[in-house]
Amino acid sequence: MLALVPMAAAPAPPSDAQLRVDSGRVVVFSLASATELCSLTRASGPRALAGGVFVQASARSDLELRWPGKASVRLAGPAAFALETAGRLELERFQNAELEVRRAGLQLALGNDIELTLASGALQVTSLPDGGVALLHRGGQPVEIGVRAQASRTLHPGERLRLRR
Image 1 (cartoon, rainbow, N blue to C red):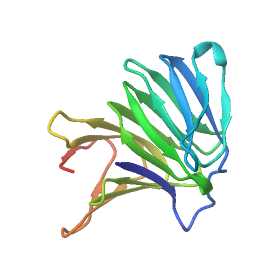
Image 2: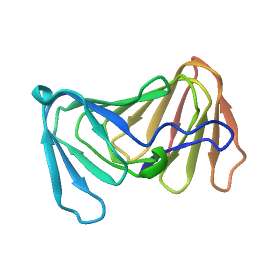
Image 3: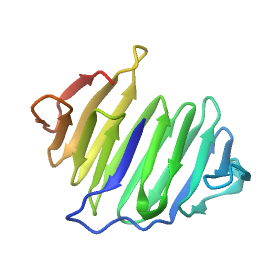
Image 4: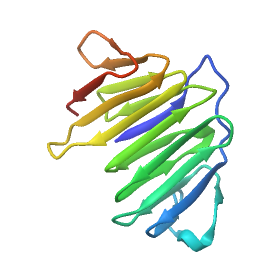
């Protein structure tokens, strides 16, 4: 599971995010009742998503979740994530995630053991066949990485790292 939460020291992204589907089909469910709220395709155009939804994207999907002026997450491949209130995003399944933070900073949790803190910049996260993830820091401020039961480390722009979940 991958979770994005606002950093405590910075203003949180608004809970209403915008979802744009560039390819594939996306189904949005209510977290509270598990009922289907809507189905989206490229023809649907951008849609506002309030917190409290679970989103499933089909194979070969390409979609973008944006908090305008603050941050964005681009997902490729089949994906499943929950968007909770207060800008919290929990990614359960994905092939590739491109994260760009302009303001507000985000904390990225991969399962229960790995936490990444990105104040601003761009980070690519790729799911690996063995269940791990590959990180590529594309630019911006260093990413702080905390892994349970290990010393924290810093990922600098241009560096790559593989982590097991």
